[in-house]
Image (cartoon, rainbow, N blue to C red; front, side):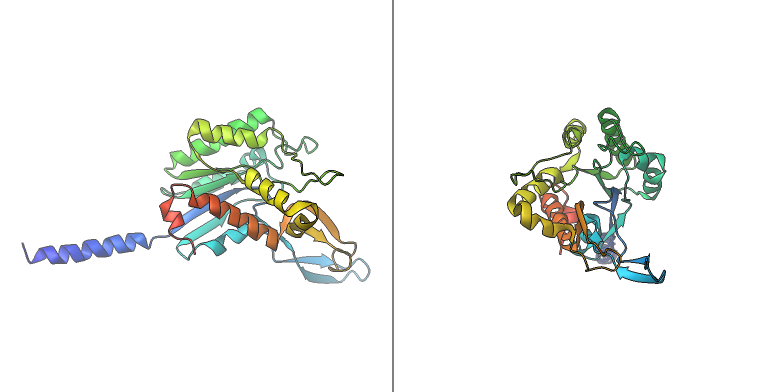
Length: 260
């Protein structure tokens, strides 16, 4: 029996090592601020009607997240433009995510931009339904023996005529915090961290984080573009870094140990 013990220990050690090499999966559910964006888009010249391809400057912060992890972490970004908690569920996107979820996986959940848009009735979600949907997300992920990570919505860039920052998300960020507290779920308060970022940058410098494109830079945008909701690559990268800083303070060693 003594002769077999060393062999057993070797195989046990190999098993532990192999388990340590197993990938860690992060799924992401959210809206356009988190979503992957194509690096290039196809357009048609308004004069010649000729098709042309042009670089797309827009990025979601979830798109930049893989750069912060080693190859062991696999990120599956299910976030899509224009989605609220209601439409993400009604279109079957949430169920598709759940169908891929395995024990030990993580799900990062961030909604609010479209839920609070009363003027967009195709996506608006009342505060009561928003809270219920967030509770559903937590329960569904836990039923799969996976871990939900709730995120408050990232800030839009808003400054008044005096250059003072203000928020337009209403009660929705607070509802995420409430669900996290009531359900004892992990929380990344992106709303507060991005508010701090925008206040630090100020009215003018904060433009460098968003799609503030002068006229004549892109053939597809001859008059330029001013978008204070969606990030350029620099902005998305900085916001992804803010999420990573929150992650370091959460009890998730299998994620923090795989940061670059």
